[in-house]
Structures are given as structure tokens and as C-alpha cells.
Length: 386
Image (cartoon, rainbow, N blue to C red; front, top):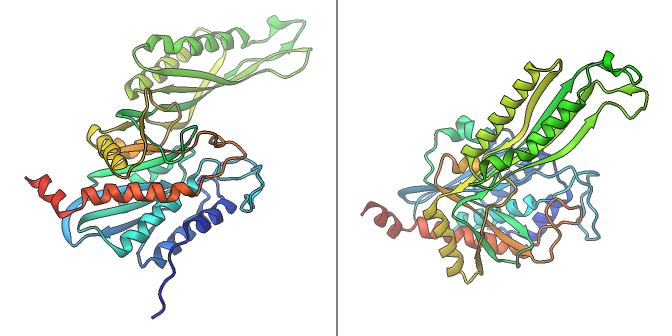
């Protein structure tokens, strides 16, 4: 019998890096993941919520079910790099490390295919469309996954600016809720010499910007932030008074309830302005993310298992300002999101020179496996039932 060669994780990761795919278009990445899982002798379940995949590994005895998640979509960024595995797709690259997240979970799959947990089930979940905030919800609503009872859920993100292999944890909110708000004002243009003949949105636009910038002040008890990201007023000509305006802003909060209140406050403000002006006012939301809220016991599990592996552990003083749609899983299942340091001077996420550090593949897989070993031993089942 020919023995299957061990999984070459760095090579696989670099192949993914060379062939990135945007959110919702990850069919080739999904196929590569499935083929590798099948190479381990596992039976992946495909096309969940789009290109999502799950792989269920069962122990001999009954027990809890633990979900481990990795994402695999890329970003619309042109890579600037000198290494040998630069993106082969112009304008698309793995600038957030999802190629590494997925590869580290495949290392877990390889080990569990050889040594399944003594009890319970492990669900390895490979998720598309994280960058646009829709992948997790789509997978959770798919009938192939929605009927499953999940007791524990874990995911990690690599994090530049922290020492390589350092594990970054936090109880309660780990990453903020966020959403993009697009506000469109439509009036009527006029000759610049007779602005009174038009419906000019300038004053209303300025009032909205002032409102947005002051909005977090109403919620000082928790971290909240509004960033006005883009403004367009009329056209770049001298002879025409503007008749339209567009504002793009990003809203963030560490608290889901506060976040909802901020969104409602903006909706109410715009409804008031529409009622008391001649403008047509339209609001749309883009890329919504809930806050990722860690369960206390699962945060402690990550911390304890990382320390048991001899890894350096640090605790965040405040939540990450970015968002992660693993929050959708944490809203339904107790679990924890954590980070692993990519290096203090490593290029930042979403930068054109970013590349996932291959040494993290082993670290992430080891920590995932430590969590599985802790939760799926017979002794763990006996403790839970005692």
C-alpha cells in the first residue's frame, strides 16, 4: 500500500496565495480545500451558503460538538511583493491571511483524520465571503448546517504588530460591530448665477456630517466611532450649483445594543431631514457585522491552553476596532475569537506587501488541537455530566 505523504502546509498555503478569489467567487479555492480533505480520507460537505465547506469528524463515544472555523476569501488589492508566490491574479490578493487561516485548519484536519477525538464531534468549517460580512450568516442559515447542535465554537485571526506566535485574548467583546452607511441626497441643479432656482443639498449634507461626527458622544459608556469616509457634492464645475450629494460613513461600536441605537438615530435624523427639506434622502447599509462577543469560559479555555503550550499570552485592554463575521457564530453558540501575532514589524493587514507568516501554521493548528483535546477526552465528558 502506498503511504500518503504528509501534508505540506506551507506549499499549500502559497498555492492558495497565488490564486486568490474574491468574496462569493471562491469556487476554485473551495475545490482545492475539498480535494485536500478527501486526500486525508475525510468526507467534506460542500456548497453550504455558497462555496462553504464543513467536515465532520466523530469520536467513538457521544459528547459535545466543537466547531473550528477558517475563512478563505481574498481582497481587491494589487500585491506588491518580491517573494516567489505572488498573486497571479491582477488586482486580487490574500492581504488578510485567509490563505493561512484555512491552511492551519487543514493541518488540524490531517491530525484528526489520523487520531479522531475519543468522544463527541468536531466540525471543521471553511467559510467564504468573510470580507463582505455575509459568509457566516449564509452558512448558518443553510439547512446542511442550521440543524446541527454546536456546543463550542472557536476561530482565530493573525495579527501584525504583535510578537510572532503571541496569543491575543479578551473576555466579552473581542471585535466591534460595524456597518457602512451610504447617504444619497437628491435635489435639483441650477445655474450657479441663480442658485435659488435649484434645490441645493449643501447645507443638509453639512448637517448630516456634523451629526455623524457627534453621534458617538451620545454613547460615552462604550467604545463607539463614526468615520466619514467619502463625500461627493455635485460636479467639479464652476457654473453649476449642485443638485446631489453622497456621503459614505462607517459606524462602529463594541456593544450590539449601542450599535443598533446608533443606526436608528441616523435613520431618524434622515427621516426628519427628508420631511423638512425638498430633498429626496436615501439611506442604505453595506457590509454589516455584529460585535464578536466571547463567552467567559471559552475565553479562559483559549488562555489556559495557549499557556499550557508555552505560548506568550496577552490580553487586550479594549476590543479590536475591526469586525469579524465569526460574530454570527458567537451570537448562536458559546465560543471565543482570538488572535495570534504575525510579528511586531510584519506588514499590516490589507496592505499590498502583506503575506501570512508560515511559522504561524503550526502554532494555530497546535492551539486548535489543544482545545479539541481538552474538550473531547472521556474525562471531559465525565466532568460535564458530573
